[in-house]
Amino acid sequence: MKADQPTLPRILVLASGSGTNLQALIDASRERDFPGQIIAVGCNRPNAFALERAAQANIETFVIDHTKYGSREEFDGALMAEIRRHNPDLLVLAGFMRILTTDFVRAFRGKMLNVHPSLLPDYTGLNTHKRVLEAGDKLHGVSIHFVTEELDGGPVIAQAEVNVTPDDTPETLAEKVQEKEHILYPIVVRWFCEGRIQLGSDYVAFDGEPIGKPTRLPDN
Ligand SMILES: Nc1nc2c(c(=O)[nH]1)N[C@@H](CN(C=O)c1ccc(C(=O)N[C@@H](CCC(=O)O)C(=O)O)cc1)CN2
Ligand SMILES: NCC(=O)N[C@@H]1O[C@H](COP(=O)([O-])[O-])[C@@H](O)[C@H]1O
Image (cartoon, rainbow, N blue to C red; front, side, top):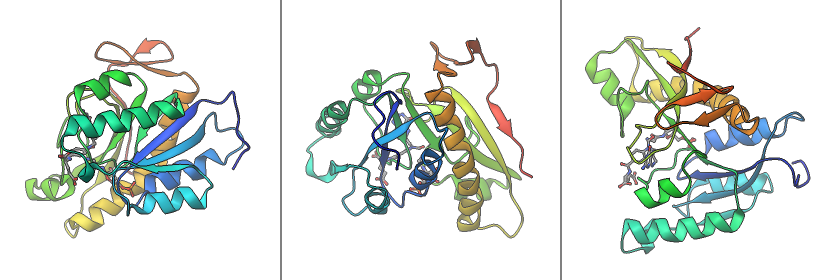
């Protein structure tokens, strides 16, 4: 890891599970020209393997266990206080499996990204791979978006397509989608750290210009 770089944008990653997207970001951040630094990783589950990945990369970790709180508001309040202690410039949700309250989202509006396993606005929520197969769709993919109060409804920055084949299962589709996630997310985080993307009232600006449609990478 680069020594603590006081001038580079400070990235805090939130995860709940395996952390393969976190790993992709850790690997990208090791590139000499990467314009950001991951300063901490937080999880809501004490057994999340993402914590092990962070520890292996000498990145500070914390756990705010959502099962220990009486309400979503109390959990979010504790999480917000811990995050603020780290003073991040960017919050990256990387498989973070908690719906965040309006107060939380407003506190970090414009500096919180999420990776969602579908071509939004289709298939918000959970179990997207299974739902895509049940619908008989031939195209699936991943979206990187700003997080807003509306679940998975924030302005989409970039997408990558995945072709669905007849022999696909939710598991094989998840693997295909995650391969694209691991490529796309570091690119978008780099754009944010370079100051190239901003959240407008209900749109994304890229290099200062509102984008009509998200950048979409085809499956090839
Ligand atoms: N206010 C917002 N919060 C979150 C957003 C968002 O856009 N706005 N994105 C999600 C990420 N996400 C899908 O990409 C997602 C995560 C979790 C859930 C969900 O239903 N969670 C349940 C618990 C599920 C579990 O523990 O396995 C819950 O919170 O009750 C839906 C979508 C992150 N938050
Ligand atoms: N709705 C949120 C959601 O389903 N997010 C998905 O969870 C996985 C986390 O994997 P990881 O922990 O290995 O990065 C990723 O595929 C991400 O798209």
